[in-house]
Image (tube, rainbow, N blue to C red; front, top):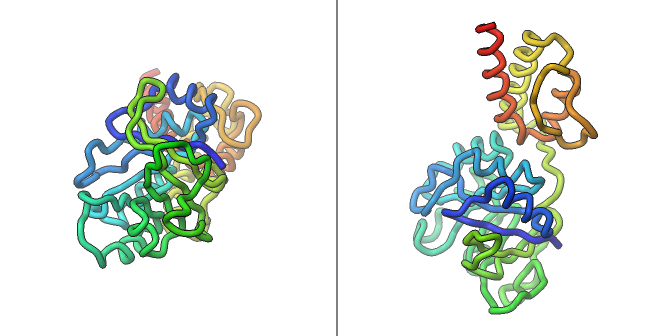
Length: 257
């Protein structure tokens, strides 16, 4: 079982995210854009702060937004997508299953919302007034077979930020490896192929001059070769956006030198 936090207006700084990780938090949730009827959708950089601290990022989202576009966005950002089916975001019934099927996302909400649909994971919201030290609210149902979690405390202050607290099964902090046959993953790998070609054009096969300043998952030190970069990014695509920006900056400096 692992600890999770989520927040809306408040986004952790790198120092705050590092403190959260040191305190045992392994998942932090924000809100995916465009976020119709959501108070404060996050940008990519806000999710990256969470990911760089070693936590898995959950992207809660609005049922009014396009599920196919959100599936693509969540995959590109390396975020675990989750439909926020709380009252007041998208009301009514009958639309949820088709939306979840199109997105492939999990579902978050009150017991009646999360147990009335098929989803790859479920997060139930109920606030008992004490720390239950459990990843599921058994007053809702017995623990479902899918990975599950419990948002057991609503708005409160931690690390100086306004957050909610969750207990989650270990699955939520686990392997970020993606299915290579998924069209979304194929799109990511196409972007990676382009990055590798452009990096090789700048440095050949050696990256010793490349000031990335990041350590990728599964590596014990800085990336030192293009093949190593490729295999590391396939294993952990959450670094692709930052590396893409680094490549653009390097290309610009190379042209001006």
